[in-house]
Image 1 (cartoon, rainbow, N blue to C red):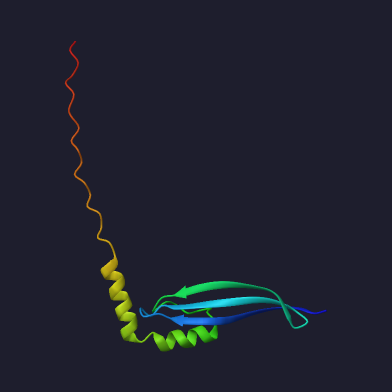
Image 2: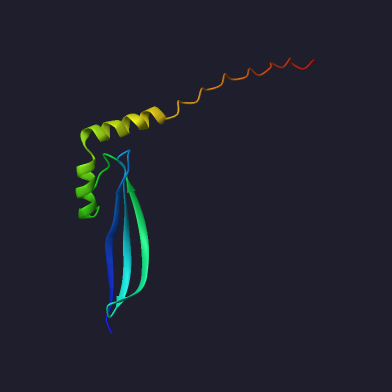
Length: 101
């Protein structure tokens, strides 16, 4: 009886905006039979640091993230950033008359 744990990237998707989404499957295998399988999903944005990402994912991200794709993504992020909220004028506090002696 031999138990093994296997983690593999089993799905990689590149979307129109250049985002790369991937899924890792973790499988517990006993004598060639998969006992359990769980998934973990990760998303990456164009230009993001790829340090520590799986090799297959890095290769696809580098191919998909041309300078034009990264620039377009960054421009879209800037265009969608909300404008800073205006600071309201402080309400003047009424002055109090000194109390009569």
